[in-house]
Length: 482
Image (tube, rainbow, N blue to C red; front, side, top):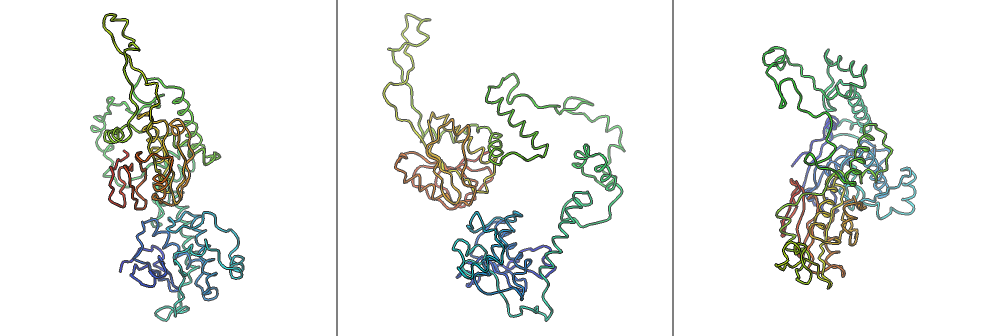
């Protein structure tokens, strides 16, 4: 048996055990909790740390909300669904863990008593019937000793324990903000004189306090080498020399090597990013969420070419080639009249232009930085191979076909859809079965590795972060973002 750590809930006697229970597997349940504070989790589910956090917190919140109290508990399905709905709404509000289940994005906001009365009369809606951790059954279990513990003592008052935990967390947060603790997990202790001096400085000089709050006080005289060894202090020097700082006072007005100017797009991009930085420092927070997401995408420029990735594109996405003809002389012909030189030209007949498909993971685990790099990569690949448009499919729990996106639209402004779960196989199937997508065009899958097992029946490659691992053995090449 594997026991999960439950932190402060161990004081109240709650515990979690990972078991191989046929009853849990039969009902597709991830975990269940009983009135004695025992959580039984199924070994049949392989969840990550954040998903297990959601499951265990869901069961513990059932105890804290008093859903298993003897004066409230009811064994019917309506009561179990309303209880899971109340806990799920709370977890979404405080952003506690990642939901392993596909619950609706919009949950009912009505009171629990009203929903309980309505669902007992009209039935529980199908999309809200299994929004907890119990699968096809309830995740609430009333044991025989519903009022008495295993040793004959009364069970802990779970709602009272939950209230004490919230009060302790709020007190710890205030102590961290005031400087009494360095983190929420530190135990409250007697404040030393230097800690009180730091608190006084932060409250007396708020402008300098923001800088002083980043310092860490070390209460150890043996680290104070500068005060003991003056000769060592005189020998300290930076890369610029003795007594001179090597940190620039302000950033350069351009990126890259000195002497290179900027075009109008770079100037507008830098001005927009600087304005967003000042806006964040002011702490106003009045910008729309969509505008903020697009500005963050601009912070990630297009990626430089990787040699292996460029070789893969040369093989599977060939670019149109120019031809040479003596009918159109070279511009260098005038310098050598006696030597005929052919000129380069594009053939007048129609030339088949190549394209490729992109399956972009837009689930909630893909952060803004990774999305920006992914969109920049798509634009770079298309421009470098002279591809007029790429077929883009956004995938979270459902594929969103964006069609053929021109290079200018990809590198400029594109609306990313999704931000839910992760299922890439439907997006790959959409591209493979699309009648307007060439059967020889390759597919580039961009993901962070937290995805399902996919199967691609044509030439393909994966673009993942440097430290990411795919949950399967890929058949195509894997390129890593640095």
